[in-house]
Length: 360
Image 1: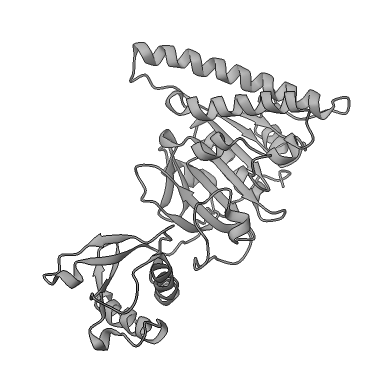
Image 2: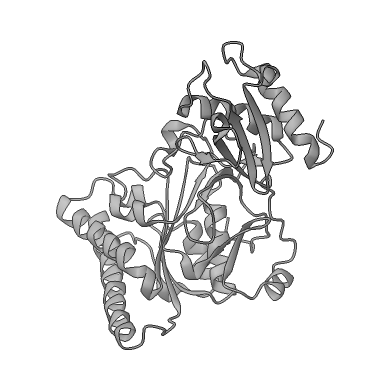
């Protein structure tokens, strides 16, 4: 049982001795040891050894340790083995597997939105307890998940924070005239929201969407010229939200789809410095739903609902096997890629807050 940090090396060593199959080599035979650091722990093998230091061994230790440490710490999943140099005197112990960790994900509970906003006036968007996004460093935000996973609830949270904290101007494209359109109507943003009407075909609607994207591309170029003269000029953020991207582009004529995708790519590639962002929602972000360039430029990714190697393949470069995913609605995986956060894919619990009546 872990009572304090001094108990962790003994506890982890015991778990690994009992669970790892290393051809009879254990800590009792002086084959490895565990050392605790501030932000993780080291598995230090003593070489030569009969086992191979490879990604397979690294991931086996990860799965054992991650479950063993819950709910004390959560290990950050790595795509390959994380090998570091140690300060050991003996050359046989000069290298180790490093397992960075963080606190276990906790859901953010907002009981009073007004009080919450009054106490949080910065440009950060809180995702969970002690996990937030600096919107100045965001490029694009992608929210994926199966039907009923909580995508709309997560989207309205982002829209509400961006709008009520006055972080960003918003443009909203809602091909189903559903939750985002109702949210926009309640918050008085009808003039910046488009959805299809009865007389519109899908091609007509996407062409209208492209007109808005083209307008934003022109704003990007205008802002670039201002930055050329004044590199420190600060612009108001502009965010274009598109719901159900896959449904929007499915079955479009190639010419219209290519034009739409080209505009998305331009905004994604050029928008960061000029503070123009994409907030996209889809059941999946495969190549037929979104250009590869947009997906690769996105630095905030949320995958909700069913989590497995197949559902996460488009947003994350790791196998989710071994990550402890919370159960319930609005749960999944989350990743921020910027210079304020280490490489990490975290279990996600989207914030709980009260929506205005008539949105969901």
